[in-house]
Each structure stands twice: as structure tokens, then as C-alpha cells.
Length: 359
Image (tube, rainbow, N blue to C red; front, side):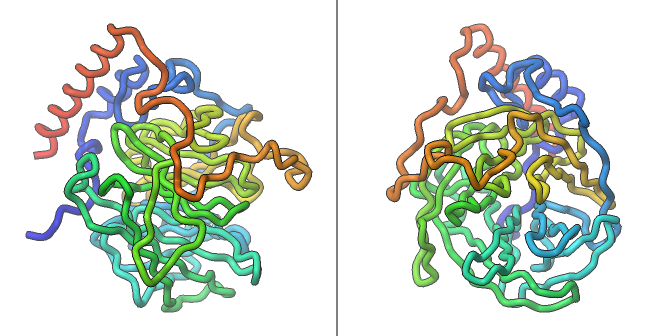
């Protein structure tokens, strides 16, 4: 038998149990134990959410990441989870696949995320594919020695093609992590990885990536529990982290802004900003899985004139040596002892249920 791949056993926990615990403010996968995740505080925009489309391609059965094309209007990119070919699907607004890009020199060990950016020198779109899943990672122990991110120049035309990628290898400064979130700051071009753990973290890549050696990812802030994806806003003013039940928006690592309610999905795995930054796209695994558009509340929308934003209003740059940003601890704001006991008991119950139902 090979190494374990695929999804965590969280997906097998009865959703009714998870929903009840989440509504009670208990720490379950997909909830955030911070002030922005207390019961009743999830923000909703006036125009709410709507179904955009369902994937129609029978090959897309485990959509695990979403990215909006920066150069092809109406195109979103997705890919499958572990156990599939190294392919990226370009999908139109009707859910039909417009082109399939095979990454000829890449390994699809456990692809979990995709991000898109623009090369300022050429104006070409760039796709970043995160082979960052590691279900054997255990609090900085075990797991893969390194993970990979593949950089691909976005094709000019929507036609099936085999592309070549630049591979960047990474390791975490504090040991192996399971991760499903990948994002690129459009202001700085810096790459970030968000771990999927009960005490999650945001990790920053070096400002200059190297292909001749392993790049080191350093922790710069907290992330919600069991984060399944992440994305930067098109203007770089904020970023979002998706969990199984909601999405949390941050001004900068360690600086939460608001939480956005998400539509109920069987296996919430992906999130991306729309091109105008006014809404989020979120998707799920499964055959003919849906993609929803969720409008952002006013507090999380971009400035009407982003080019005039003063430098002092921008997110604090990540230190070159990757110092941790100040912010809440791994479990957010202090809670009464009673709530802590309830949370611990709930986690134990979830772990037991996951073990029993996942066998």
C-alpha cells in the first residue's frame, strides 16, 4: 500500500451533528473560534448568494480548487483532488469545459489548490497549482519532506494543450503540514499557503522563489480551523479563507475583518474572488458539483478607487525572515472555562464519530 491520500475523515461526520455544534459556537471543522465566528455574527450581503453553474464535465469529480482567469473573461479554472491526472480544466459560465490543460512535467500527488495572478512584466496570466496536501502530517511531524507548487503561464487561447510548468519545492520551517489553501498577493507577488489543521496557520513563501533549492515557508499568522482553501482579493486589500461552513476575510495575516456565510455544500473545498472583487465563488467536490456566487458585505468590498489607497492603508508587509504577525492565538479570543470544556468534549466526540463512520 502507498501513502494515504485523499480527504480527511471529517467528511464522514454526520452533517446534522456538525451543523448543530457549529450553530452552538463549538470548535468543529469549518468554524472559527474568534470573535468573528461567534454565533450570529456571520455577515451576509444584501444580494446574498446564487447558483452560477454545475460542472458538466464527467471528468471533474473532485473539484478541489477554483481560480478566476485574469485574462479570459468568464473562465474559471479547477482541478481534481489526489488520484487524478495532472490536468487543469478551463470552465465557462455555463459549466462546460472550454479547454483541458495537461501539465506534462508535473506530478499530481495531492493537488489541493489553484491560484491565478498576472505577470507585471508581460501582462500574461499565471496559474499556481498547489500540490500541498499531506494527510500524514501530524502537528509538524511525519508527512512529506517537501511539497510543490507548479507555476504555469496561462495560454492565450482556450484549446486543449499540454503545458510545461516551473516547479518550486517548499518545506515548512516548523515541520510538515497538511494544507489546502494557496494564494498570491497581487500587490507583492508573494505566495502564501494556509494549513488545514485544528490550529491552522498562514505561511509566507520567500519574496524570491528558487528552483535550485527548497524554499522555506514561515508562519505569519493564524488561520481558521480546518481551512479548505484561500484566495487574495484582486486589489490585494484583503484575503479570504474558506472552511467547511463559512469564510473568513482578513485585512492581513492575523488581522480578521469579517466572516461571510456560505451556502451548504456536501464537501466545501474551494473559494475565489470574482474579477471585480465584489463577490466570492465557492465550490464543492462531487459529480456535477455546484459553484455559487456569494456577494461580499460592504466592509469586505474593495475601495471604489483602489489606486488611490494610501500606502499606510495597505496590509503590513511580511518580514523577510517570516516573523509571525501579531494576532489572536490558535483558538482566538479567550473563552470561559465552561465553553472550553464543551469545545474539548465536542472535538472528542467528532474524532470518535469520524473514526467509527470512516472505518
